[in-house]
Structure formats: structure tokens, C-alpha cells
Length: 202
Image (cartoon, rainbow, N blue to C red):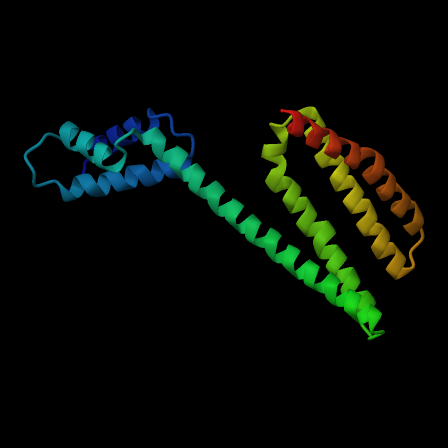
């Protein structure tokens, strides 16, 4: 049975009244409900009853719940892709840095290039993605733990960039190394040991 224009309009009105904000999702739900109702055209129930049961079959906890589930799935897929990229670049960066050390010790060609690739993967991709991944957890922590995370990232980035600058003979390597060391020694370590002390007496 083909639905009338008035019935389709009523379905859209019901879906619009559900509070779903995503227009594309509302359109998909309307299309789905129309298909279900057309397939049940031979039954004796009224249109209103058939629509009610079609909605219950599709979303037992309400149409708005579909939007929450859709958002959760989209965020899950994004987070999964980000974690895959994060750990892949972390692994490749660590491998490149390790091989660069071996090449350097054995005086093989390509050591500097491996170092640079490894540092770039670790510093410019892995570390920022790790910070983003941990940001929601860090924001719920106490101020000392937030400062520890911030100073740790700054120290790692400064020391890592100093390594790249040193290998490539760029100016500013010593200043970056000094900055990273000072931030690590007088920023990260005090907050780290303060946190460990608090946990030990808790």
C-alpha cells in the first residue's frame, strides 16, 4: 500500500517533534518508517496504530535515543581511527629512532635521516595525538596532575626538537635542549614526585 501525502507529512511531523537535531537522521527515519508502513498496508490496524508499532520496533526507548546511538558510533569510529594512527606512528617513530641509533653507532649511512623521521613521527604526530586522547581524563584531574601533564609535554617537545635541530645542524638546538631540561627538572619532576607523595600517604 502506498502512503498518502498526508500520512507521510504526519510521519515527518512525528519525527520532527521527537527532538532529533540531525536533519539527515530525521530524513532516514522518515524513509524507514514509510517503508515499514507500506509493507504493513494489508493489516487491519489503523494508520496511527501501525505508526506507533513501527516506531516502537525501530526505537523502543524513543526516537531521540537513535541520535544518541548514532553520535556514539560516529565518535567511536573517529576515536578508533585516531588511536590506530596514534599507535602506528608511535611504533614507526620508535622503530626509526632505534634504527637511527644503531646506524649512528655503526657509522652506517642514513642514521640522521632515520633519527629525523623517528623524531617527527613521535613529536609531531604521536605526542599531540596522545595529549588529545588523554585530554578528557586530564581535565578531570587535580591541578598538580594537569600541570604535570602540561610540563611533561612541553619538556618532551623541546628536547625532541633539540635533537632534530642538533642532527640537522640548525641554530637554536642548545636553547631548546636547555629549555626542555629546565622544564623537565623544575616543572615535570616536582609535580610528579608531589603526586607520588600524595598517593603514598593517601
